[in-house]
Length: 375
Image (cartoon, rainbow, N blue to C red; front, side):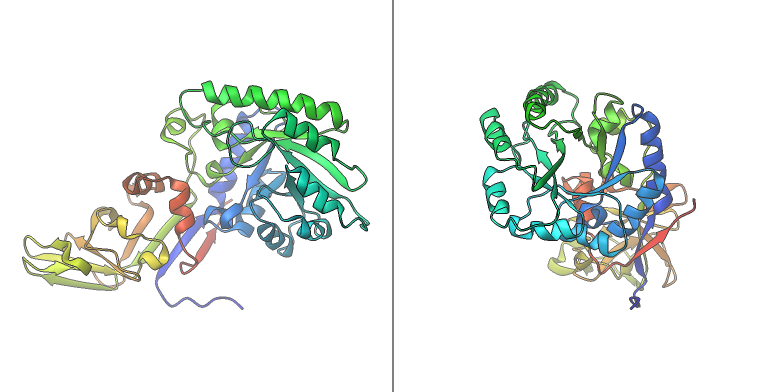
């Protein structure tokens, strides 16, 4: 059943921007380097199924997610491309991955032992081995760990397809630790190749690595934040090989407009008081939609002009100081372009002292997604 939306508020996703970002990246990469489109966390808040389909149309060859549930959702949507689950999945659910031809990330000897406990299988489980080269999150970290893990590989039950790692500082100017991680990975990869004689699909580059260097990234890059037109860091934005095109905009309308006299307070806590007579607009969006209370003080766009959010953001509404009276129903842009003015997630994340990834992921499902594609 198609959802019915009565509130004038929505997120628009420009799928042509996602396609353009992928095509531009592919043009800069070394010949033969594939693009894995990362669509975890509901496509970083953009919509996983829709983004996945657009990415594959643009030339991505594989998809990556964090959870088995996310991979199953893509399969249920009819997507047949290879899907890698990059997070840990309990071995008791490995048969689900086998049934739906989903590749799992494995990096623990104990995991293998639990998986082998149920030996009566008709098909092998496809896996990628995760090496922790210095991120400190998940993966085989030491050579001793790796060698023990490799002794437990049973090729009758496993199809070892790939090996990968993840960089923690690829978006920073100083490359010393990046190089340390790369050196550690290459040393561990040599050990893997001494045991796994079949051809391995090797991928190390995230968006930051892919945007800062065209070669030396092995077989593929995992294009996540950059695919959505968002920069991994200010450094990458300043040193980009091409300009990314943001895909997401958030728009709503004024639901109420009033003139208040000097000395009046706006919203909870009386944190904002008018100094003179002011026009105040109410907007039907709040922290229940992912527009956090800390957005107070940020601007929105109305009639191509910046106007500040005043008073505390409520769960379902917030207020803005207007330069004049506007009709109810006037468009309000939280994220995106209006005339010559633009507000992007990088500006919002800087105000919130966080990263654009988090802001996008916090936009809730109360805001319907509308998909545009001009290609």
